[in-house]
Amino acid sequence: MSMANTHCTDHVVGEILASWRFDISGLSPEMRKDYEHHLVECEFCRGRQSFHRSLDGTLAALTTLAAVFFLFALAVLKHVKPFEHVAFNVLGLDVVSMYQMLISAGIAGLCFSLIALVLVLTTTPAPSYLGGLAAERAKSIEERLPAAIKSFRLR
Ligand SMILES: [Zn+2]
Image (tube, rainbow, N blue to C red; front, side, top):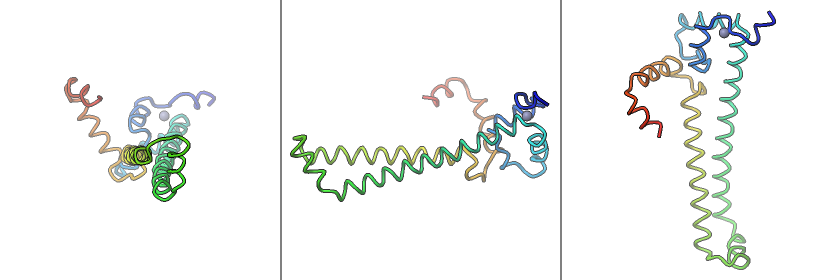
């Protein structure tokens, strides 16, 4: 029993689960049964499953927070006038270019965090409609892609 925490009890099932990041929410109930059974008896996989789920939750929360932060920054930039005085009097910068620089930084940050959020929501079971089967199918298609296409896509 002392080994249960560090080793998977069934490596074949364990590796399949790992390739799905321990997300079986997209499987049909009959298919899910075997994996659920393994998760019940295998402490190792259960631990990794909860780790992946908390990771998903953390990522979704962080990217949402980042998007909110950049939205807030843009809202502040639009309304706070003292910013312009600081830029003009203290820093001696051209007000318009300073303002545009901050706005475009805010927009870039917002876009980046929204893309990150979409990636998190599409690659994790957060919205688990397509789930493991779709991911597995995409993975098997990707494995059949010629190496040239694969390296192009990774860039
Ligand atoms: Zn296992």
